[in-house]
Length: 404
Image 1 (spheres, rainbow, N blue to C red):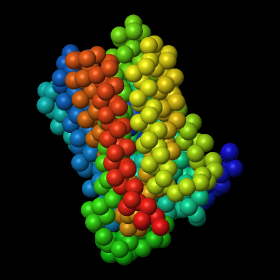
Image 2: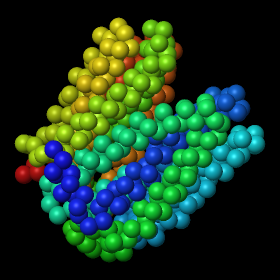
Image 3: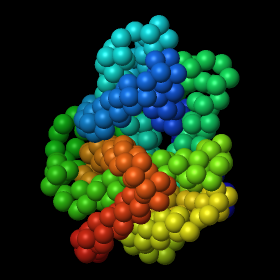
Image 4: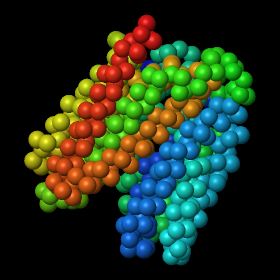
């Protein structure tokens, strides 16, 4: 199983930028939660905490693809060094301002700045793999490894945030996230040997991996937007699962086990990502993507049968096994469909779609939980998975034609 991973990590400079990317991605699982805990504890207002976190997520969703477009045109280090610096400093300023009980509107403004300049580190890392990988098999393994490492940030981030806030100080999780963003980001961007060459804005200029782009804008590839819509709906699943699991744990009298149950969900995805990348599987990526959405929909449908938090965690673990392979297949589709000089932008739309879906799913599931309890939240979870499957099936004929 480890042979293929050793092969890709022996590519020149690969383990250096991948490990730096792990540190730089740690804030993905920490920042939003850190903002909520800090402001709710310091100000006693979940409304301002939610508004600040929502402003941050919205800014990331809107601006990350624009930064990625600039990255494809001018290069990772030129664009992202100042952006990462501004984002990290804005988070540090937000932590200080909240600790000093500054006006809440200032916190929202700083969150907007932090989100608008954060960019998509996951896209930057995958764009480098697209550049250094020597074959589609190596790229498959690299993408699978990065999907598993993404889950590490989702597993460690919330645990680290809650522990630091409770054991030390409410402001510390946001400070740690900002320092990881600055240190990991600057280290990653200093590794220039593996940085994909910028296109310079020239249509048809070589993009990551030496491919030549057609200069076609992403909106001209309509099937891509169906793939992004499927990712949006899968984001709804994640946002709704978080809220529903917390509500379910409270209903069965085990609120402290909500976090471990969500950890098990990510653990299933982590393990599946490692296994999926260890070999080449039969079938095309579009078939894996469609099949994965089918399994996700089936898995989320089982949550209604849980009568204990332990059983729910087991069902979430099994469902989690379907996540990373589906994401890797979708990322491979995007990498193959976008012009060579727009790879970073194309991959960043995946992260943007998921983030927007998480925000939508958590808010709608919250309404469902208020009205019907945890089943109302799980209805939203299943609806998101069903819509993702419907969109994927709609895209299947076009994806099949493009693959052939």
